[in-house]
Image 1 (cartoon, rainbow, N blue to C red):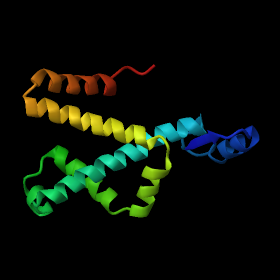
Image 2: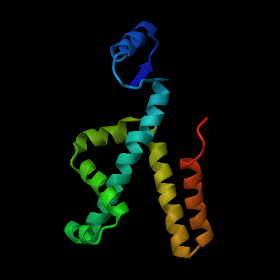
Image 3: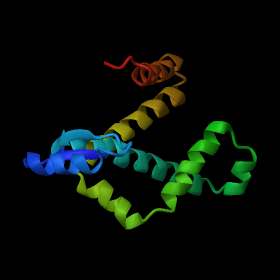
Length: 144
């Protein structure tokens, strides 16, 4: 449960108390941090899946044909994309368009895809490995 501090400490503590007897984990932050993080947590993950199913739809290959040769990674990604595709598109548009930090997240996605594309098209194994290594270091970095 994200608790956003908007300047009324008593209200924040009242909200925290509502979940004190539950197993909910509360995380406190200010509104700007909330929006920056949600741009990544919701905006980026939604955008990635919208791009994924859009690329699949443009491929002209039927979903059942892809499922017939699916890998573990593809099956997992497809399941997530199917869930996103079933959601309310107007709500997802609002998530993308109303958060001022989403532009930064979408630009980072665009740059990452272009870096991947450039490495693959040019046959630059070193650049490709560097992308993979950066991800490994980021995702497996020790917590502070």
